Image (cartoon, rainbow, N blue to C red):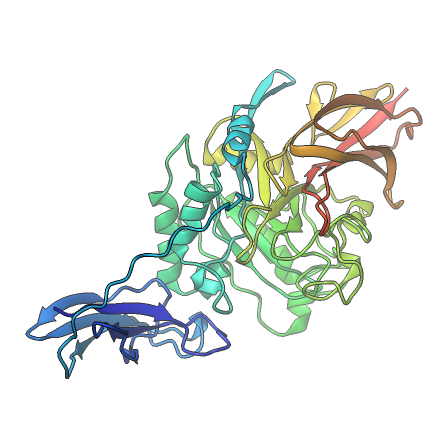
Length: 483
């Protein structure tokens, strides 16, 4: 017999655009024959020909959606057949011993299983309500909108979330679930329900909706199936971007759509050319922001850990007006989450304090900003009396925060940030505990009586030699202290 191998690869060396073709090769006994491309096989990366014997040859039945450059050029799917034949008999195989496995391979996360177990076991009772932590993210691209040959299959997104990262939920981050191609949107919707296995795994219905700066890229989230992505308003730049004073008509239309369908959104990479100058916000449907992105950087404030040092260091351009401190100064109530975007793994988690392991509970946690962003499986619990991160409330007396953090490595630095009105936020507390578990209280001894202040906590683990240690950012709480 003869061994045939069919595989998918990008047809160009640069890998630009979402397009992959099938190639076939055969083993001659001592080598692989030069590969041949199957005509009319351009499609997604996950596209598997059916193979049947045809006499001494092989019949491959394969599909194409007619794409020529990327997903946006895709048309209707059609089937084609190719006969694969060899003009020479195969030689006797030259067998060799398999290579020995590498020695002394050190795992990147040697205690990850235990770290995840600890996060899942953590319980918090706040104000008479019991919460548990659910780790996930909702900005992860796949072959549908990879831009180039760098992201995995749609199926790989589920494999990463369930088998690799041990997440409790995930949401697809592809642009319009495939640039508005109906079939691709349907695939994402269908698979989001196929992998719905509560209480163990609870995927959300999500997608990325992108408008360039100053409006910004945002990721939408819903708890229900069947909601199609919202097209952009046509008519040029004015409807898309609007003005700094009045905001963007397109984004306001997006907010109305989210309200109608009960969804939310989060801006991402806010300090880049994909970001925003914060001309728009609606706390009902935009309650959180992606403070860190694994594919790029942090956008907390200029000079913050993991943020771009300057324009040259910025990935995706630098737009300082988009740093999150500027949004907080405008009075926006934004909680924090972290997600991956492209190809990044294991350094972006959006962690919610959920009342139940359900889609509605995950969405509700984000709406209440009961969430934090993290680079690792860090537990971060910040409260003030019977209130928690994300809450808005009045308080009699001085605010006292209770902070608890459990790291995967020693926590090198804890910071408390306070903001008042339109003033620039300031660091009001810094400590270097250098231990894996930290628990303490901090009281604001000089509160701005009668003014709404916000407080949030950031922890940073021990720094490796090449940069910042893993970080976690608790969502702010907005407090009006009264005497």
